[in-house]
Amino acid sequence: MAIKDEVTDKYSLRGRVYNKIRGDILEGRYKNNDELRELTIGEELGVSRTPVREAFRQLELEGLIRIVPNKGAYVTGITAKDVKDIYMIRSKLEGLAARWAVAHITEEQMSEMEENIYLTEFHASKGHMDQIAILDNRFHEILYEACGSKLLEHQLREYHEYVQRVRSKTLSENKRSLASTGEHKLIMEAIKSGDENQAEKMANKHIENAYKNIVKSGLEESYPDN
Image (cartoon, rainbow, N blue to C red):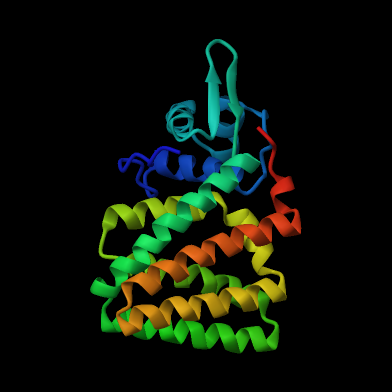
């Protein structure tokens, strides 16, 4: 997957169109091989064909669509293999983020991470699954922010977004959400104690466990094979 063009500002017209189409693809509103029509999407979004065409070019670079000359644009989306690849890559990168966070995390970030764990445990005890999903996302955001590398943070956010649909489904399961919270706590404790190796190991393991749960639950089958 290519890193998004930094010029694609989410607040620009092109950026808003790009993010809307991209979000629809990643959330499964468009299926694999669906044709994307410039005119139709432009009318739906109330824009001309130009920002739609520009968004298509960026989405093609990202590997989410393919443009066939003289025919049109077609969704390629995220495949089951992509999901596996993303989780394996995320495992290594989140481990690196946790390792670097030991040296760079601020007192404010550590306090927020601790509060995040406390709140997640509270909502888990009450069965508030929607709140758990929100807090889970925020835990990873804190970790990314604390790693001290804008490049690593950017890439991790990208991969996080790619699999948001399947992550939301796994976190709706109480058993996995409880396990995930426990794993977050181990990552936080390792960072707080200054143990780089343990922080990296626990973050690696956390993402590996998340993917194992996806396979066990059969959720990867919701993505096309190729």
